[in-house]
Length: 272
Image (cartoon, rainbow, N blue to C red; front, top):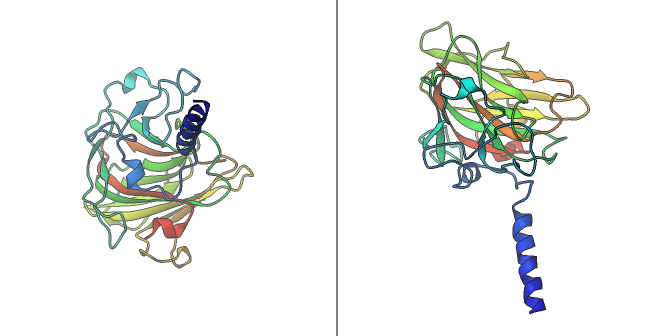
């Protein structure tokens, strides 16, 4: 009997340990859109933080999509981004037409921020990390709105390496840019609305004040980072000590889809 109890306890410990951080990299659509990661077949957010203070009564909701940060009364009309089967593709990208696509609804009445909580500790720090995504923008404003970034907190509220979008002066086109913790100041060449592109944002978190981020648009699938030119690069000063979540912002007048998410510490894992 004692031996059976010991074996049972060992198995339980193994299961618990396997669910802990950090997740094995790369993380792709198979993890980002599992049943345990999303709210439902049609809704992105699985959990909701009513405040940013985590304790035993409000524990970290790891490895899933959550509503970001403190909820204000004015946020009540907003809803979680909607999901649909992914139909986005770019060249020979490995995650074409796979998993789910996150819909950014331009008819939303207020900003809604959602995060994928990666970790509550410092597992992702002191090296380079990459986030790749298929992006299809259908509508944008001229204000340079952030819609995708890394975040230093597992409950959000510390976005760094912000991918921003604005309408071009030329009808039918938009521009992407990269800001650190603000909107972008350097913008890409014109990109056509309604066309799927592939973006990669690279970030180097550090507790020593040497953080930086770079944005790549439509890099060669299967190529090397050394052969690509960043559209924009930005930096901070001890603002991003670690990566703890991935941040998506839905807002009025911003329409589009995000899919094919892939997170890793190697360029080769993301751009393939």
